[in-house]
Figure 1 (cartoon, rainbow, N blue to C red):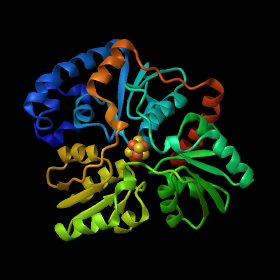
Figure 2 (cartoon, helix red, strand yellow):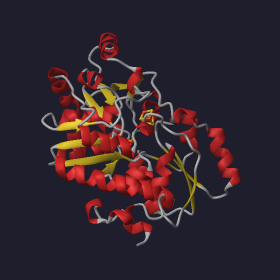
Figure 3 (cartoon, rainbow, N blue to C red):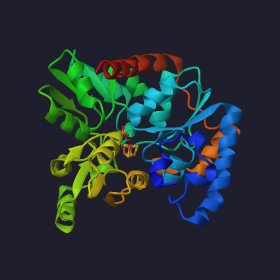
Figure 4 (cartoon, protein in one colour):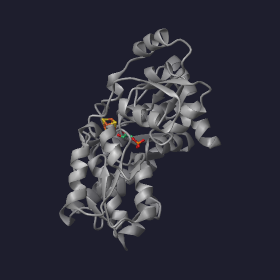
Length: 333
Ligand code: 13P
Ligand code: SF4
């Protein structure tokens, strides 16, 4: 089978020996395939699904993920699944969001330490202070935040719907937090006055415009596509700006000869499997939080039903209002 076919069929329809064909070296398949078989059996026993973010390593992304996507897609998929157990192969805020939209399901994360520099940059108390300073101004909160922060917000957003969410509000001024760079990008796409917070992503803030200009010199004609968590000088250099799934779709639709995906490292590895016509130039900025999720960790999560992510009732209820508002805006556009 060709690598392209690998992702067309749902994972349960693929033989385990086919899943990592051409994706990891044969020596690694020897270790990984028994692990995949164990995980598949545990998924059946527990009536569980593995939801995987686009930044997971290729063994997870192509080997055991039932459903894959960006933050918005994962939130929607979590809301729709009929499984009893959700294993979030992603970071903690993604697992919390899955729990918020699915309070009756068991949500597991393979490693509780899988956090996010953006989520760490702000607390619920910070939002209460912002509301005192800017009375009546609505608060739009990026999903890369804790449930406590979401509970203090009017509506959440992701990188794929941030502009639409801001535009949907009946106010000329909007508080947008915590990502200053995503907020600046949104400000460049709307006439609304955006009040920013000072958070940033430790992975995307490392990219520079100068580095991308070097790629243009080194690889004439290369296409540069970037995640909106990057600083403005990086986004100014980009041919396309979008969420992780937005970037993947752009590559599939445009089929560029050469591309650099200005985002976390594993994504190019995952997409390259599905886009053999495109050459990927790969700067490697890894997210240390995403990389805490491993195949063994997923197996252990299902085996021992660990580590359960819970959100206290009152916080979950208020956070759900903000998340549901976001999902409703997406549904009407
Ligand atoms: P996406 O919603 O675009 O997948 O982004 C999530 C994230 O953590 C990017 O760093
Ligand atoms: Fe957070 Fe950045 Fe890692 Fe995404 S890549 S989870 S925004 S630290």
